[in-house]
Image (cartoon, rainbow, N blue to C red; front, side, top):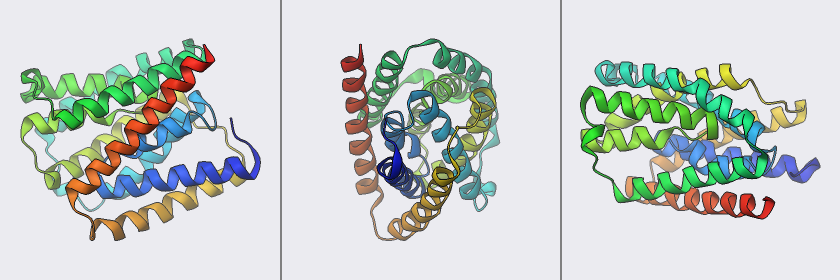
Amino acid sequence: MASGWTGDALLAGTVLLGSCVQWLTGMGFALVAVPALVLLPGPAQGVVLANCAAGAISVVGLAGGLRQVRPGAMVPLCAAAACTVPAGAWMTRQLPEPVLLLVMGGLVTASVLLVLRGARVPALRGRRGAVAAGAVGGFMNSAAGVGGPPVSLYAVNAGWTVREFVPNAQLYGVVVNAFSVAANGVPELSPPRWTAVVAAMALGGLTGRWLAARTSEERARLTVLALALLGGVTAVGKGVWGL
């Protein structure tokens, strides 16, 4: 666990990168940031920090896209996520740190591989698919800070375009992270670290918006997934080393 100026710089850099990715793709803060955050303030604090940051970014991002939200899909999806958040939060409090690292790294790695394959799952279509994706996503979000991949897979199977996906992903991020913060609490950071986190979120948002106009969707997507895969494998390795 890093501390002092080095820890503050690493934490700020991780949040900045995650914020930039979130603005580029509509979802991705947790995939990129969580593997590093669980190694900096620790697994439990890393998860709740990811929940707070991703939720705040989603609130800002949703402001301009409310009209594009699809209530027919998002209401059952978000309701199912809210129901499974407490189970994920409970699991986080029960497992020792090395096991948590293994779980988080494994979930990130598996999620990235599934999204890369663009997995087509008949069960992830229609209202039942929305409920299934929301239930799995809510559990993963509160347990490991990574709740987006099931929603991404639902969108793939529903045939959504990126433009359709982004505002709906932002709504999901607001709801599921609000419930996750309610279940897990807020991170216990010092005032200097909070200042660094907020500044990094703002700078990451500005950078992400600037890059979004200059980067193709496919290149941004592949970059995010590559970073997430590297982080997931690293967290797994750290967990195995700590057992």
